[in-house]
Image (cartoon, rainbow, N blue to C red):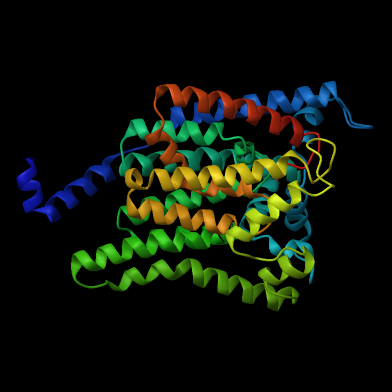
Length: 389
């Protein structure tokens, strides 16, 4: 269709583009191979560390070498919730329920082994999440950009959380499903996926931004909102409903209250978090390697926060206002609390798109090389029980 005709009948072009997008599938085999390659790399690093630097009294059986390195940090808490539920006024009420519920369900297959269940859920969800992310980016741009964005995501230094016993992969899958459904004008499906995303990670609330933008565009194009458009409020409703159910079941404070009173972590504006990292790096307690918490992770969290923000700002014109607003909202939410900034950046999906559309061949080689080195280093530290976000 020529440009003048396209300008004359934007509604027809929009409907044609949506139909072309609906026919687009996902190259699941290639996506699965990419995730499998990352899984093999991470497993090799974890098993190698377990063999060369075994923990005290650790068995060197194949099962222990392959599984035990991934029994770290939040994996314990998810397993505890899956096995025993929430406790009143406990630390674990800050964790959303969907991932532990999935673990509990999959233990029927794993014979009650929760860590194995967690790894199965996360690895399957990673394939689903990366595939849906690929489809969403391909719909927004093209397949070449989508493949580069997938590569940037899988080589991101904190990407190993996608394949550990963490909730990052289910959250990615549900977020990408929500974004794809919203783009294809399926508000009920988008709202449902967004609600499930919120029940997986509190960061799912950020999905209200792209959902609201798509709702505004539909209403502007159609001249009015449709009844089903109200489904974009599902994420907020799901959070309120879950909080009420949790309070009824176990009592205690809200999720935010758990962060503040049990974890001693206050929600704050992004600049306060950045300043807190700077102050931590300048304290006498800071040692790049010889500290359990005040170490290189602080430097990484600060640098990656600034890097992601810089890339989003510089790439705003290429991303467009919709993705830019969504990216900035996700970035602000990730910086709303102290710690875990690198891991939370996995939810800033427009960042991976921005790198894929902005980096040339030479820059891409450097990005891939540096990211891979950092990824291997972070994994080697994580599986030893060193604190990595």
